[in-house]
Structures are given as structure tokens and as C-alpha cells.
Length: 344
Image (cartoon, rainbow, N blue to C red):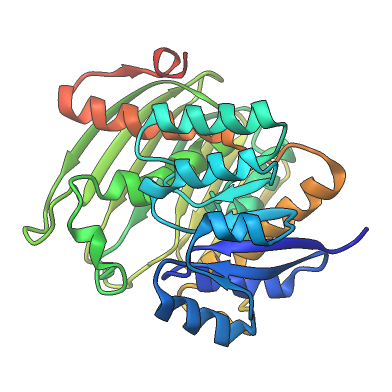
């Protein structure tokens, strides 16, 4: 099969990780880049040796023959760019948050479905190797049927220094981080019936919430708690590790700090180190996220080659996006929110 020709739209903070990952993956390469900021375009183009550069997405689609686009811009531009890709019959990966509103996200999924082109959301946390190890332990049947889970991300890391815009939005931790944790909960325990949410703003210098606790009823019968905080000072800073607890009918799974995985089940207890690899271009402590970028982008290439639907397709991600919307609605009302009504 010929190598897939891709283009990156958006050359900001996180896109550099995507460019490194594309360079590591066989079967695809980025042949053109696009950004409205000529300086960012130059920095990324020079770093990765990309000479075909555009400041306008319409010109990119008109000027290149593409097998896919990787959209790494901010949420307000996602819908017009995804719809542009759909009009040109070009498969698209879209960065998260998927869209500003659930209505926009549904329209994007419909546009790609109508055009017959794949759409995947770059929801990479579930692709981190420690989270995949938890999934594998569940699939082994060692702990039986899961009935409780906790997905926890608690930190005092200064995320605002690298992404100052995060301090200005009325929505913060659920939209930026909680979306990943909610997706992990879906990945491990299945889709959700209801969600109950409480939020707080501890840091007075930011506009949005920096603490969120979410209780979910899953269709499987399991209950989960997803808790996120950027206001939690610990003796050992765990950023950016996601910690996981799963209780099952025959045992338990614990993913603890420093990637220690303990599985207690039908055959006793096994403790293992599930640390992600440190890729040559990666840096601690970001390496678990950077490694997952390679994994999800390889998954995309495999799906295009085999004509299969991505695990984090646009249609699937609507369910995660709906959880985010339901969490904010529930935080405001202080009442449980039903998910099915949002997805109709």
C-alpha cells in the first residue's frame, strides 16, 4: 500500500507532538502544514523539514492531494475545518475538545458520514500504555465482573504557563482534562446512563473550575467516580498520571503512582511496572501522553488501511462529549443528568 499523504492544520503547543509521532509511524507522512500564524508555520516547518506551507486551509485543500488531515487547532475552528475536509472527501482527525457545542459535534459527524469519510477524535488518554494495561487486565477476566471504578487525576502542576488560555475560559478542568478521564471511564466500564457533578474553583486567578467530582451510573451496572483537580498539592507530584481503581466480583485492579499496576484476582496477586516507554523525542513527565500520540495515530493509519472504524471515531466521541455537557449542566443544577436525552 502506498504511503498515506497527510497535512497538519494548526502548528501550536501540542501539534509538535503529533508531528514527532507522524515521523515515527510507517505508512503515513505529513507532506504539508497550515497555520494562520506565519511564525508558527515557519518554526514547525523548519523543525520537521516541511516545505509545503499554507496560511489558509482552503488553499491547502485546493493545492494538495491528501489522504487525510490532522486538525490540531482550537475548538471554535473545528467544525468549519472538518466540514471543509468532508466537502473534499478527505478523512480527518480532529483534536479535542471536539467542538464548542454538542450540536456542532453532531453536525461534524453527520457531514463526514454523509460524505463517506472517516472522522476520528484525537482522544489519546485511553491509548496510554498504562490505561491499555488496565483494559487488558479487565479483558483477562481475572477480576470477574467490574462493579466499581475510580478514575483520578489530581495535581498542582502549573498547566497555565504553557497554555495560558486555559486560565481565561469559563470552562476549564472538565472540558480540558475531565474529558479524557470521562473517556477512560467509558473505555473501561462502558457507556453511561446518568452523571452527577460537583465543581469548585480553588485558584482565584483563573476563570473556570479547577476541581470536579463526577459520579456515574454505567449501563453495565457499574458505578464510577471520576475526580479531577489542579489544586491538589501532594508530596510527590503525579502529573500527568491518571490513577485507576477497579473493583470486580473476583478481584481488584489498582494503577498507582509511578505506573505500578496491581491485579488481585482468581489466581492471586500480580504486581507489574507498566511505565510507558520514553521515546527519543519525548521528555518526562510528558512521555506517557507523548507515547499515546504515536499509538492513536498508528491506530488511525491502520483503520484507513483496513477500512475499519476508529475506536475514538467522531460518532463514539459524541458519547464522551455528551458527558462533558451533562457534567456542566449537572454542576449548575446540582441534579443528576440523563445521557440518552442529550444524544438524541
